[in-house]
Length: 198
Image (cartoon, rainbow, N blue to C red; front, side, top):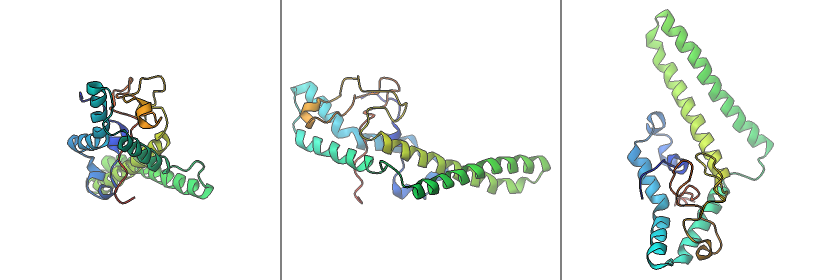
């Protein structure tokens, strides 16, 4: 498959890498491409089987895998959040944004007054706050997208796009198109595999 845009699924960091230096500096492209390959490999093979022999060799396994993935990732976002959970999450985001804004003003002040040695901690706090906001927002958007028919990357409605695999071979589950017609992400509606710790 030709390399296209990365799906937000592939930019979602795994639990073990959240506390590492990758939180600060991002991940190399090869890491996200490897994550994409793990996410779509079985479905890409299924697409090639359907193109070559007209059917899936293991439809039950692929159907179960898709159902497990969709159930796991859509369960991450409750249908209705508790007010206390919503308030806690909102307060964390407000604090992170406040750190970024105050840090920016502090950085400008320190640079204008010539106290350059204090800028490094300010920049570090701003960078960590930015990464926190980005990762939390991405996770919330992906949990809402699981089981839906919109591309989680560009929010394009894929309901009218032809499926990459026949839904009847997957017990009526709709896997979505092989590529998003808008942004080019590979298998945009296929969530990552369920983590082994789940």
